[in-house]
Length: 151
Image (cartoon, rainbow, N blue to C red; front, side, top):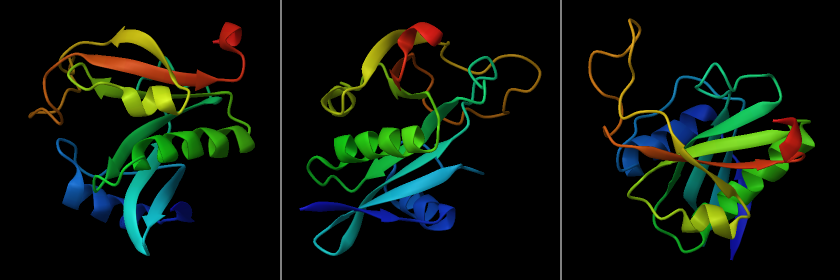
């Protein structure tokens, strides 16, 4: 049986550092949620402002990291909980990105919709990091919103 638990950013980041396949911990967040299974932390969702400045309208959040230890249904459980929490806080939309090699099954199970391919393979411009922070491949953006016509 899965249950939700609040987690601090430092707890969530420690979990990400231990279990995430291709991302490092994040610097900041709006909130983090944990998933408990059999008395242990089985996953975390770290939710913050959208990384894309074009989507950062004050009413949209982004699941910046979602990470589990492989517990069945933990990913979809956390995606659904993140959207419920965002809605309860007054946000109208939530987004996340997955690699084009990932299936998106957990997102679809949580009711999220694929918005299509997003961005390029790497950051560009003068502020790009010296080294890639994630795999250099295409991503899909998934989202949930209260009123899709308003975004």
